[in-house]
Length: 330
Length: 235
Image (cartoon, rainbow over all chains, first blue to last red; front, side, top):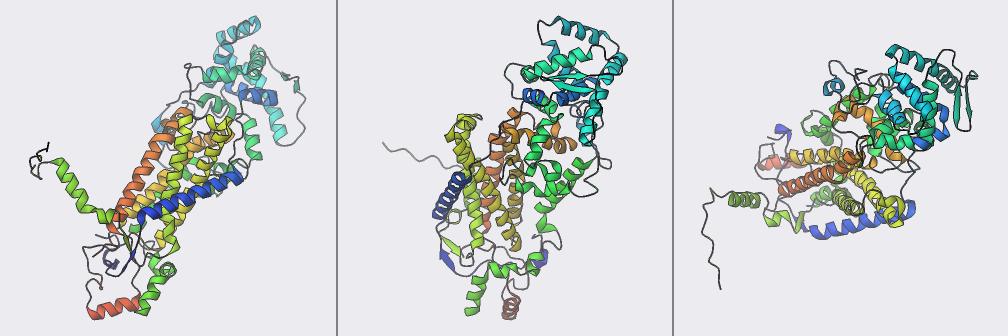
């Protein structure tokens, strides 16, 4: 039965037919669209901004790198507290009784302390100072490790906050020739040595390699280096320059002045609207709204009101004006 | 030497014969590849359907050339960048003409006359095309891919999809982009086109005064009574 039921008065066509060459039409269309694509290519090409690396991040923003790294060490970074699918340190997003992030569990386990800091440091050879510092860190109780990392992180975080709020930062963090000097008020134990070594390793490209090849030689999974790099300011700084931040309609845009994924405008729109915009569960709310709207889009023929709107608003008279004109002439 | 004709197989037992008969019944050759079209199919809006298919062909051909040379080729050769640009603009054109096509079909209420599945396959094609494009954007191996992947992960993780569809895993995304999702889109488009050929292009709304005239003349179906045949078929 038709979804429009008795209101569907669509009749089989008993009228005239005009000659039509389907294959020719398709060939012409492929030629025309192909030519248009070539023309757009010649006129505008396509964007290809080089990817960022952890080495670039560590060289260009050493204090930012060390700030992110020490948060990975003490477990206070966004990824350290993310929850599934990376770890159990957070519950993930939820909406009403729906907690799919939690239900699906940890599928890509990430221990930020081990994966982003201790693991890469352990791969650095011939550095007795680092070896001793690592041994001291590994042998310490969890409480002590936390206190050392927090003592080192405190001045870095205060400086980052002051810079973010455009205030004068405290004189506790300084950069010199690519190194970072942090004046701690408490005992940071082996953490300063570990952070200096990690920074030097990252600047030489070692951390890029160690995060990528930690599982096997042939590697196509960039989860760890991308998650680590996204904790810092380099990617977001570049994204802001290319109008790619969330409040700039995010990923529907593309680097340069290209149209990007314009079809994602409705996804991006919800992130600009309150209460979703400021909700800690914004992502699941947007996905649920889009899920419902997508289902409604598929089911348009069955939705009362929406399915008769085309009959009520006579755009069809414009589309079929030739047909109605020829009917009048009979 | 002449080959003897194969022994007749009872139609009711041969899956092959039954499949062929059902296929030919649903779509006889003159319906599958028609040489005539109802006269009401006379508007520029109809161009956007075939333009969507043409864009898809441009995307598949340019994407196949990129796939032949591998994912890094387009970054370091001019020819590679040329085909990547064609691929990208093909995608932009595909979405543009498909959206116009969908709006056109909505205002025609193109699901009428038993064409619900035609609408549904078209709508699902659009929805499947979105992740097909997304996986392409995160497979670019440039800054755009890095940023889009790190942003898209949160939405997908929030609904649990990230557990098995990791946008930060280039290898996985590349597989989805060049095989699984394009195959889904092409199959959906094929089903959509076959359904259009089966049911014909949706005919215009009857104008009220014409309906009244038909009712007065006692024409069948003018009062909304059910009918078996569909519009767009040659009678």
